[in-house]
Length: 317
Image 1: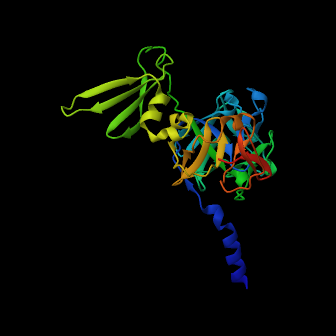
Image 2: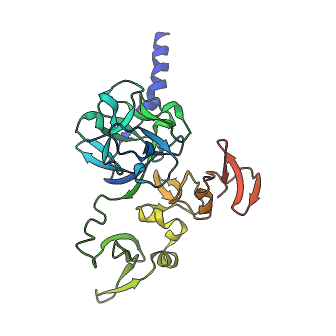
Image 3: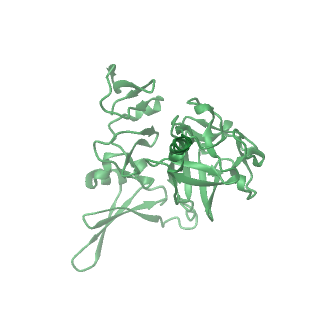
């Protein structure tokens, strides 16, 4: 009987260990809670020492943006607006210790590991305490407090990292006004499409086409979005998502998350952009696109077909 009890206990805790450390690309991110869909931010856009960290609907402010930098086996997570580190208050190792921002002093209560859970979500673990970044009591509300808690395998401890830009984007703008940074964003039909970034605020594309004589013909296209729509199946999803380095999902993808950048899905364990058919006005009015396409339809208006998921109105994609 004792052995059965031990086995049952082992099976209960087993899912907590089904995680693996991942190598996170350095740069600027939004950090979105899986349970609530809300963004990690600093209360009232504060830049003060010990300002509280909470969750809030995505408002695009820099107080909801974080620079993630790798330091050895750990990560430093700095708030863009305040230029202060994500910190567990007073070096606490206790469940319920509050999470704040504080000037970077190099202590382990300001260092984190990031481990993949499933479907592209991660847990963010404090190095000093071994406890997880957690939305208190599984709150779904704006202003829900963020603290640390032992790993209980719940969605309010899991996060989506949405890459915004690399650390070095635009740093040479002032010195090289007429020379942009180049980034290969696609390779189709043996032709490279190269986006010109931060070139006097222009949004041009250069297409390099190989000819039989090994000489390259360069075509400058004035409108990136128009070019992609004409030449590339990536036009099936939001350009804002493409520019973050993500691909578009297949046409019949299920929407998992919606924000100002567009609608997001998951394929082969990677985040991707779903089609544009869910109107942006739905997002701007504070609603979401439904994650499933076979929901019951309750009414139809100019925005689309409305249904309910998790007790909230959504528009069917």
